[in-house]
Length: 440
Image 1 (cartoon, rainbow, N blue to C red):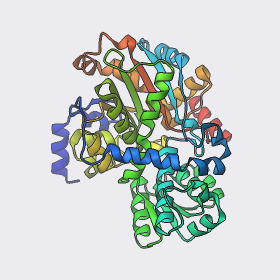
Image 2: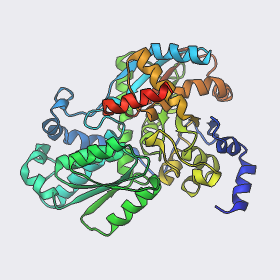
Image 3: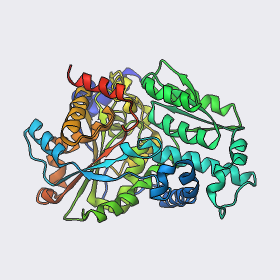
Image 4: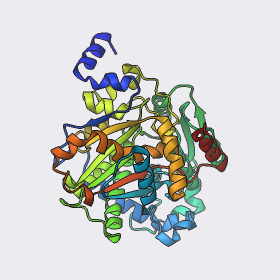
């Protein structure tokens, strides 16, 4: 980025100076609208994703017997975390009004992270397209046929590739190998060794880069474009990924109703989503706003070293600005969030959908990791803990937002929902390493 433009941006958006200094910030999105809308994506695509996943349910119960009890549905529960709420209140010397709820995507079947939604959906969607195009399937068939050796052998001539910092690569690698595809995962320097090892164990080819996430995606995209038998799952631009994540919203609505949690004008819902390139949180946010409208308030959480979505939305430059452009190094322990440049597609969709963004320091993630273990016996990856600080930021720095939206008198009836994005697949030795960092 040219120095003149950089100087102009810092002058126009003074908050960039604070962000540059790696201080935690809370940013309110002034482009938020009561009736959010976009021309870049539609509810029809979410409906298609729901129906596709339903068709695959018979196959999924064969491929993954642990899904028998859910009839092939890949879903996670919600749970109230009242003790974690008390621990945070003590630590920050404030009171969090309302309920404190965890959406447990760290326990999602098959790959143990939010990426099991979009990643697995896009793999299944691609497999369906290929099978139909080659006369091996009709939409009316029983999809248990995907478990046959005939289809596994058929898919062996095709490759699925992806660029990833870890969890997306895991979800795609695990599902695609199960179906029979060749898999190539281009992984950035931020990716944890255990994730690379697990992928190789499943039979995927892992290509490592010393550079960050954007380079891994760029190289993966380039290589895939040269192979007509290769499908590249593009985390920066994929509508299929986005649709897979958006399906979560309607399911959450059912879960909230079953646990008597209301969402309406008198009962606001605040949702805090850890954000990397934006696909996962963006898809979920889109779905939630389409269902709950102005009564859901969504905030993306990013590391102080990598607030790419925040600066993209704030400046309106989206993928044309990177965290390096403002002087940050994109080095964080939150591997899934170590992204220097946000998705242009997601950023543009989110312009009127999300309420804002905030940042957290790595040491806060580890502090929260210890608190959640002590108070609730819940283990999440460090990056997943970014969501835990949403209510703190909102109450300490978001009073203007609360008043502007006339929420001050109904906060006691609010629900704060933290979207836990990953953790159940982390090996024991890695968990111990994380806990050791807490005590340093």
